[in-house]
Length: 323
Ligand code: DGY
Image 1 (cartoon, rainbow, N blue to C red):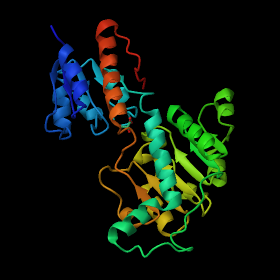
Image 2 (image 1 turned 90 degrees about the vertical axis):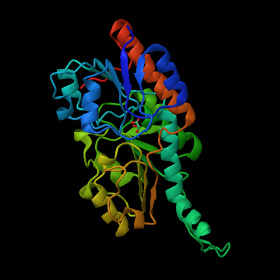
Image 3 (image 1 turned 180 degrees about the vertical axis):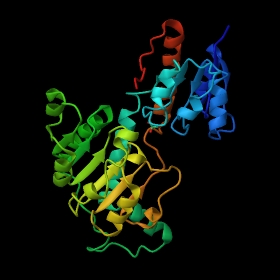
């Protein structure tokens, strides 16, 4: 008998097609996010539930005697929306989709970094408003990005892709903070130096890019005190998870010009934004587009498919996430 698979959001057509050829699938044709009740219902009616970042799988969702799911195949690399301990306590395996989105996420971080240095969003808005009066030497002066020091927090797959781009394309000296010691050859490849504290990185960097996981451990890792350590000319880029930055403190730091600017692809309460953020010209805001290319979104889906295939054939999926 085919395994029953429930998919919580609409996925690329090619992946849904491939899933339906192997499994007894239920797709979300309306693409409305699942409520907690619907998530619990899925966990009690399927062998595999294929979730994503918009599904809040907290302990309460797992609190049922009728759970049938054996695997949660998460579409995305970040799993801070899943209570991993509760999943494990209920013998549910969780997998994610690393590697396939590292390049595109680094590309979006680079996009934000360039946009905020060169005031690209402001310039676009000026043209669309019809208020551009023509070239002049003092018009919309930004900051040079080439050669500036990039501070990377979290030197995993995405952080390293970011470092590659900054080093090879923009000649940027790189400093990195990571909880564990970084392999010296990975540092040498991009001529980077590991620093031993976030404080030291924040005070030295001209631009800080966040590539650490979200979740409780890194909640408000960047808070008011830490923002105060940054140079007044420095920028911060977040393509990791919204909760890593205290968004209220960031709005304050940006409106006081305590730091020069921010480029954000993720937000604390997506899709709701903290009051004041959209009023700031020195904030470039994107709607969580990190992995959103046709190629990557398909690869993410096929990676989930590979994980559930592996799970159902021999129980050990390649991308099992441990609590
Ligand atoms: C990821 O992979 O974590 C993306 O942010 C989408 O969830």
